Amino acid sequence: MTTLFIADLHLSDNEPTITAGFLAFLQREAVHADALYILGDLFEFWIGDDDPNELHDIVAQALAELHDKGVPCYFIHGNRDFLLGKDFAKRSKMVLLPEECVIDIYGQKVLILHGDTLCIDDPGYLRFRRYIRNPIIQKIFLSMPLFLRQKIAGKLRRQSKRSNRTKSSLMMDVNPLAVIEAVKAHQVVHMIHGHTHRPAIHDMTIGGRLSQRVVLGAWHDTGSVLRVDPNDQIELASFPL
Figure 1 (cartoon, helix red, strand yellow):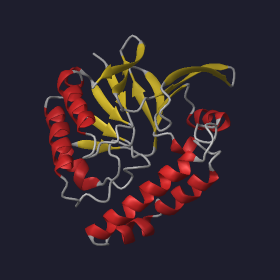
Figure 2 (cartoon, rainbow, N blue to C red):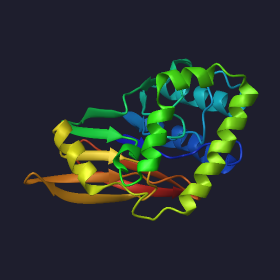
Figure 3 (cartoon, rainbow, N blue to C red):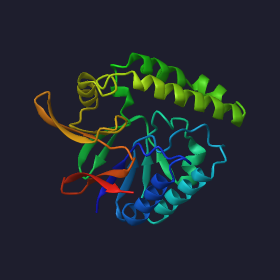
Figure 4 (cartoon, rainbow, N blue to C red):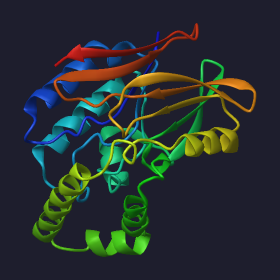
């Protein structure tokens, strides 16, 4: 058996191939796992659990069926779907986790997170993140009519794409000191995150201890999954969609 980790699928109506690949992944591989962890940005955007999008219903049903077959699914919010709420989690039978969470994987303590909070070399993004994560701002946004939320979300996505084109590669990656601080704060030697779309397994030495940081890949032309088994074997793999 294995425990699976994925992130950054960015599911949307505009990418049916990725959705089909995800559904096939659930049916063919995830169904045989001990658990599935989704570390954020499952969806390209999320404007509220009340959005009557057929894609959301399809995904919720598929995840609920996975749960019913004995495979629990855990979810950490990403920077795209941070408004995904308890109603959708209930429909999909997912467990919502805090943005930084230490879990036990076959006797090993592992810190899991989306990863955007580690990108401290982009202060503009972090300021924006603090603003939009404010519970008052979120409550105001979710109280707006659906069509207005859609317009705002579309505008923010366009602005984000324009902004990212002007940012350096270093700015958009995690900061090494932020990684060290997170590892030390949670007293772990293993970290798994997504967000940067740079899949890799990084070996590090922190505080005299060997540590490991795994970065999950995004789903574009291929899917990406981290497999961890009870023998401490890990595999970061990609597969065609």
